[in-house]
Length: 160
Image (cartoon, rainbow, N blue to C red):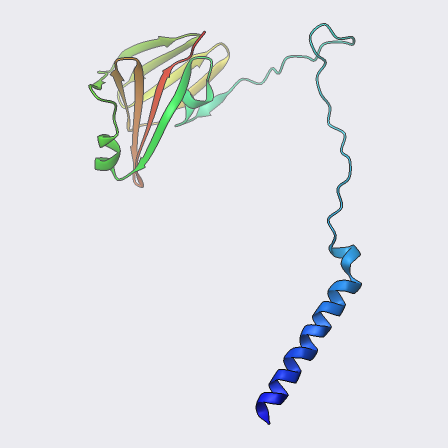
């Protein structure tokens, strides 16, 4: 007798859920509306040119080299325990001994101790301490260590 009571309860609840969903189908339906997005004019188009953004990049940025694709292109990233990440360094990588200055395209990287500053035009980014740079054939590698482990980013010069 109990199993029939449970079975009938399940049937009634299922029917109620389906009826509610059917009655509210207009509320559930996803509606797509149009949105106006301003797009700058194409070269040679009419109208005044868009002003160039004047805000320069500034601040602490462990990812600084990844933010400047005109200078370096990131080809890989590894993170985790320091031993694992160090094993991912490119073959033949040699540590760059500070102080050192590296130039890639419009970017100048000034390495001082275990930190670095990256300059490109008005952009000034700082790579915080516990950073170590390596050079291997055509690659530049940046190894950063902190209390959470290590992160390795490998770059190659951008193609011009």
